[in-house]
Image 1 (tube, rainbow, N blue to C red):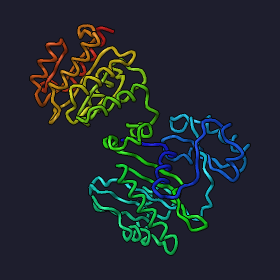
Image 2: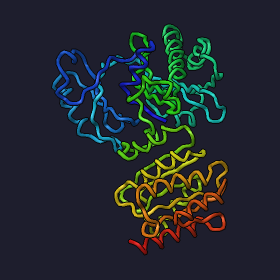
Image 3: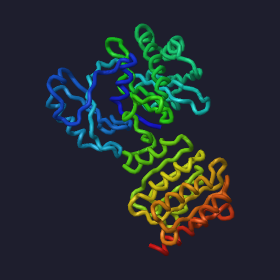
Image 4: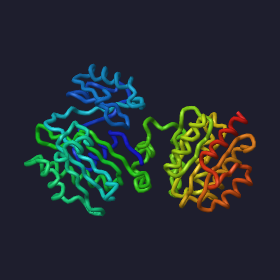
Length: 399
């Protein structure tokens, strides 16, 4: 999955007929000029995280000097591990009420779901739990548009009437069109505001796009950053390269998270088994250099690219590959990709410890490929814990 920054999402909303504040982006305080600041402005740290207001990353200014001072404060901030390199400057809206609306995918119903409330400025998760009568959760029929009567029903149930009801109905229908048009997994407007003039406007927006559908959206190239929704900090250069490896082939999935320090390259698969493998290494005193999980039967080329990336990190002195029992990932395909990368990098398993613990589809052929390459292989006759212990011992012998 991938997210875009707020300025990009608001540009898309505006292009699709949804009212948003006038806005622009600056990369230094000096870019804010008198011509731009003829009225009060809002300055926001342009980072891909929520709760910026609570972090002090949203400020208000009434004149150029004040705006430049506030902008310098923002540029000096790091918001939830993201340094502020850009600031979004917007017109200040004359707000009467703050609402909330989001569209995402219901994991149980497997349909788009709209969550709406007129109780803005609160945590919607808490509101659903504590005051469910103040929230409307509405599942939309798949492969169908959101009809105006449905959007009207949602807002009517929340007590919206008159001109605001007409405006909110139109905005919600257009938001749903954007959600479908751009293959979103999340489109959140928080707040959706009712102005003193009874207009309805998207004051803040979050838009995430399913990166499996990005081939259908060349216009989003460079705007959406794949993998960013899983990160609690900016992606490292190596993580960005591994996103490219994953995106280059639709077969299977591969996710790479770089750890600070560490000397054991780590590749795993199988959800719970992956976490177990990582925890076992750490409990034995080892230091993984990364956390990398594969699944869905990745191709040989994807495994090859992933292995090269894992082994390219400075300080990596060994490789541990662990899966419990696969039900679709082919062990022989994994083996060929790993061995190809190891050989291309000129690594000798006699001096560069590599331990594999895998079982499942085509594991006998996979074992043959690994063993012929001089790589230590364990199947289902050995536990993950036993294989990890061998890995740690081999590292002690060469380090």
